[in-house]
Image (cartoon, rainbow, N blue to C red; front, top):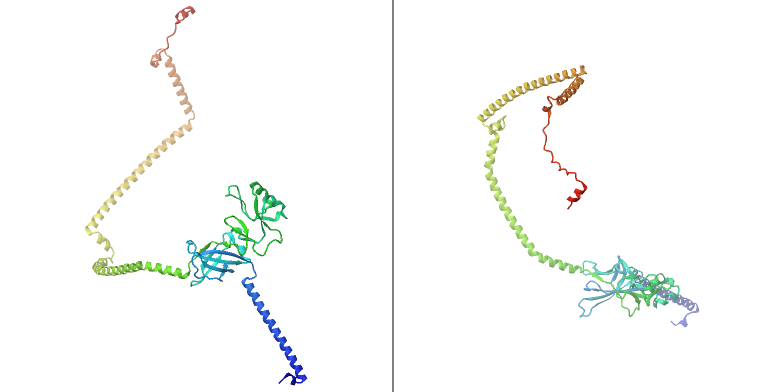
Length: 431
């Protein structure tokens, strides 16, 4: 039916329906476009498409278990992605596989020149492996976001807001071995040191407020010990040293190889065990025969011990009857001798006690007489004095003097005396 054949009322209703369908299609298309844009934005946020990424590279022995697009992990988080895996040239005999990866913002701030390295470790029971990076422990940030500038030491004072500029290199003394100033230190506080060292040019960062960029501006060079300007398309990424562990399958192969090497020793050990078991069986058989032979001796011992169930049985067995009588006679004689000796010792002790009593009585009588006659000691003293006077008088008596003379001893010869001479004779005798 043609549209001209419809009534005006139907044509009005149809135009309204077409308008509603058109608005529905436009709304559905807009909703579809919004959903697609949201999906793309969410995916970009999740994968870090809009975030700044810092490139790194390392070398590994083999590419087993890793591929391009695999995540890079740091402290258990997915912080980046592997971008490139390719073999090294055939004439490079030290490195096998070149592996390049990126770390997204803000996780590249954890990687420093000291302590950070890459590790390729096993991540499953099969050949799957994962690339991990470690947190730095010191040194300098690998990448910087402040504008880098090279200037002379004489022009440092002319820089705007001079006190906020930072060194972009390590400064050494004239020998080139002793570090004097490290990068990231303030320029204004160390200007006198720079002038004293006689440097002509120095690399500095413009660390003023608002100067930090969202993209990378400088990369650290380990060989030169300074930062260089970073260009995304031409600058080589930073090299992180790697520590690689073999895959699980390789470990299993090594384990199987070790087991195969150990199997001959295990077989020899089982043979030795079999020989030891056979020897043990022979020993058990010999022990059984010895036990049978020992039954007779055990029966004799049982018969001997059966007579020990009455008093004195063991003594009669060890000591015969005649020996027992002799021991009784000897012990009786020894007992009589001990009794006699005991009696004599008792009498001797009594006599000694009486003698001690007599001595005690004698000393007590002498003590009582001395106590009763107080002049006895003085009289004895006077008698001794008079006796001494008598002896001294006898020594001086003319009749008894010769009896008390002492014999002369040989005295030392006296020096001859010089005769007295007159002064003239003395002068004559002088030589």
